[in-house]
Image 1 (cartoon, rainbow, N blue to C red):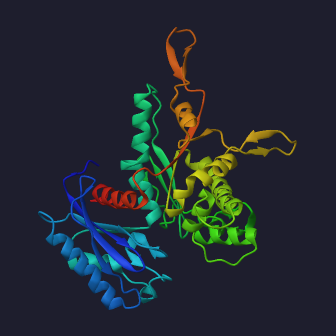
Image 2 (image 1 turned 90 degrees about the vertical axis):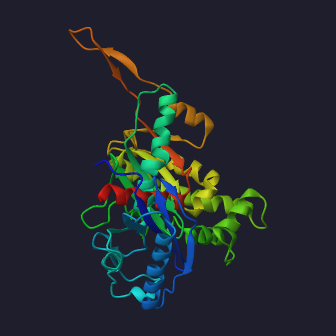
Length: 362
């Protein structure tokens, strides 16, 4: 349904330490963000801060807001706006009806989702997906993409799926979740155990035989040669993450079949992650008789690589004749999928996803 892009939506970036409130109109942040302490151990104080933050945002905009829309950590019943038992928000244990509470306070619709879903939605409507289609048009390629798989590499392994501009929530709000997928290196483990901040640190320590508390940022600096440490182990720690992530992404693409976008803090190390990730996606499967098949029907392209990006944009279609008519139709014989890193930034994509989700559901 068409929506009024000039409507204002209030947003919230819900971190474990601080809350950051803002307002978006026409895909643009229109006020200076308001940062306030979160009080994760005190429910009443936490709720007071949330109400105060949104009221402060309202005081800085022209007119009235159309909705409140934001991402909040799970577990949660997002459809009903109830936040569950969060490790970083002990005050919410037992379930807190945050969405209905805010609706009562502000008398406007309130939408809460997880960050993976809103990241995907923001990238699909205002990020990598429209950008890829603009590039294809500029290259004279008639192909257009309508589907997207988004993953975030950070504290955990998040995900989201958009099909024909519709966010895949699922019947239980679990659509697009990838963190519980099988871990390629050990099927007993969650994929998230190989694709997360803790995974990068753990692999680096395993390879060096040390017990450090280095962060992925510090390990990235070692991999770049600008930090002190074992450079080979640092590079390998990101390559291992890429291998595990690539396995899950490839399995997901057999169902989703769309552009892949990667976000999250660890994605800043994409130069060390993407080669192994793409290599894993280009792997093979076999029949019982030993016949090999590519694990994906689509050719996979690293859109952060200049040559592969150009090859992805190239129009490989050609005309075939319709029998007994002489009429020509276009045959796109090469199936392609591109893998890109977020251009608009993860937090910005989440905010834009929250904004567009609200407008499309008013």
